[in-house]
Length: 554
Image (cartoon, rainbow, N blue to C red; front, side):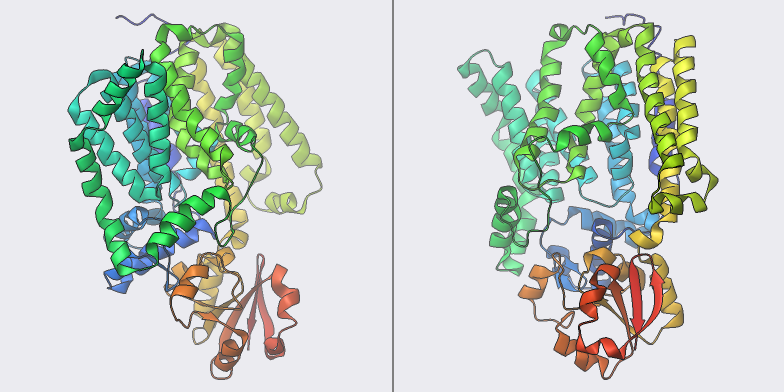
């Protein structure tokens, strides 16, 4: 069928789509350090995996020298391979999420072409990769982008199999689902079967039809593909570590969902926790939602695809909202389907006419005007720190205000460009965000401290006081596990219990070490009052301060 011409929806060339994608995933990718907390953990595990020379660590990953079984190993395996090929650096550590983000774009283009919405798919690809949450998650080493690309591939190919009955699509679906399981555990299975089961139930004409379609999806050859990929690691892990079945299946999945996992190191929230965060994750494209409210969109015309897309993002949102364990980055998994449905609905609604394209720009201009006023009049020490370094950071609210005003004007005047102009807003936002990271890097990474310790105290052993996670990038930069005294670490909790070690030290063990070894002790400012109560406090002197960390030496 020939596509109806829409002067407000330009036929975006593929080269432009991929050019925009390359910008968002690669711009200054290695210019900022490995971040503490999650990224530091997930960069150190494959580094140790590669350096250990012990095949057991490829089955049961190790963090800071201790067993770490919270997550399956696919992310670590892939990152270790990249380290082996390209070396251990910041940009290499982020190649898995970058590749996953690019893979999601490819899936969006493939899927929308398969359902006859190729041009809306090109806009969806741009919306996806330039959304605030996706841009951030594509540039940080975490599990969620990898899970997103694999689960998205499984769900998309599963839907197309239901529509076309091509057996190869079922094999692809089961293979991707197995890899998604190896990426982040059984949440992949739960979400997949919840989405596909709901779609089959709501799109089937009768119960018999539903059961027949379900039987086709569970064909034994497809299940064989799944089990051949998914089971070897699980069996090997159970053989290597006897406690693995309870720890992984019960503690890390069932008890986490119920909010009873030990240790309790995750956030909770109300049922509406993700609603405002979803709008922020989709920024700036969330400002097009009012256009849909004002425009008329004939969803009934394409009922089946809209039903599928709505289920594909709504079911995960409901699941994560019900769960007791909540995190902002979980939202990335719904973004491919949100982007596709938003683009299709906008195209069908013709963007609400000429004035429909102006509404998002006006709203963005109001937002950035308020942000500019707040920056100029706010009395916030953190903001003052940002004013010191970098003209772009100092004036980024003003630059975005001007950009949004120009985008509003030209989207009205040059209707042929229309919605495509709005990608300029996130394109201008990315350098500002990276500048903020650069200014605050001593608070969010130990890269500078590690370099100073290697240069000025090469003979001193580096020891962390209490909390490992807030300084988790340190082992990566020191290229060696570090000891922790009086540990309060959640991520090392079980590794310390399962394995006798000299990594986690009691006060007495630390005192014995102190008697025979030069020590550089890193203490967070929040832990300083407690540190002052220790008997060994008098043996140290404050040598340096970096961000929120104090370095004491004996």
